[in-house]
Length: 296
Image (cartoon, rainbow, N blue to C red):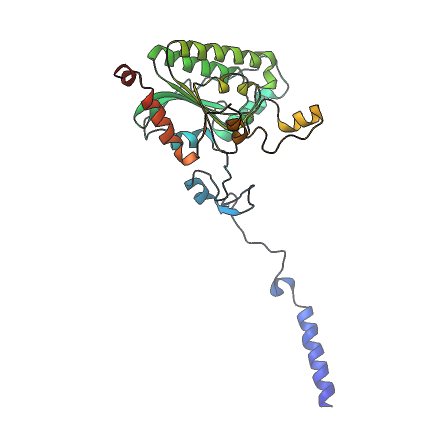
């Protein structure tokens, strides 16, 4: 009798447990409420990183993966505090081909990024040395070069030539902007001509190739620097690796079009870690300062 009673009680307890409401038992489907953007997953090692810590570390993961920087983040990292003055801030592109949806996309990106276009140009100091600087931003139409970006670059080089100052350009671009067709391609020649005049006047031009630097930007001003630097692992080339593989029907070598591959083959002068960029640029500016050269 007692044995039967014990069995029925055990059964009843089990039944009660199975019939508990889902909220009382706890659900595997419930997830912690983590605010969006507070954590970032590294594509290199799949490690989840506290975003504030990532920003503090110049957006570099411990595994060596480099996250892309915005133009404003780059300027804060490179320029001396309170020394940077932006030029041609409101200069933007138009829609020369009346490309469907292009104007709406520009307005939407301007609202999302706070940028007028995919490039910021200005004048400031690095390690106390005055220079003109242009920084491309891949978050704005993949940093593609349209008429607005070409005009801003040309104007910056003209100002630097007139004042006898060096120019530093950080490239991050998918190439020429297809929505502007031949007008975009013309910027390659226009900016290259401005670079040539700047060089003929005896002024220093440094390019820093970041991920990615491709297309018409690579085929023009990105590779015209007197000194060409690159960040580790940056994709640098004209056509993308997938396009090349599909065209030639062959597998490309390991690391093809990466900064290390280009350094090995003489297209890049030096690969510089992100935390050392400011000091490296400052050293080059001091070494090529015109007054110092006259005293040698």
